[in-house]
Image (tube, rainbow, N blue to C red):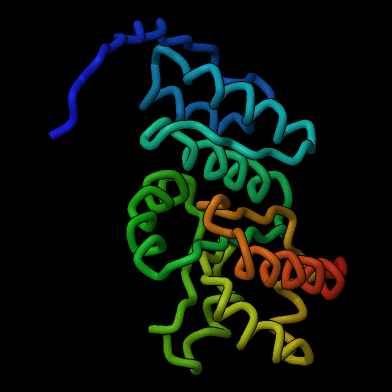
Length: 198
């Protein structure tokens, strides 16, 4: 029922590919090259390069633009270089974890790297083994807040937290308003209790 007064068509931009960053661990670089022989999108290659330098990264690109690949590649690189390092990835909903499992598997399984997830569906008695055996753990913030942070004196939890080298926040735009404020306080607490372990 709206009257259209005018329209404008925005021309598409030429896809910009860049080479896979050469500083990536050789095993990761070879794996990525098999799937992306033409290279990576420009924002992917630049973000990976920044991550390898130790910079914090925030990717704000459109859906299906390859944001997940960036942090998965960086996670694989990091844990291959350091036998003790752990990665934690926060997803704001259980459904998002389930949606991402296949992608993590495609990156980590060929490299013989273990990963797991902990959300509200996982029974309590199965949670500590996930922390002990997984190099990458996918988790919802509510479980991290209610369970992980409430059991800091448990050896497996303190060891896991002390070895976190990469923290991933998927769907960061969700963390706004009161939820965002709570998440900001939670992340400060998490940083305070994550002390290096060896």
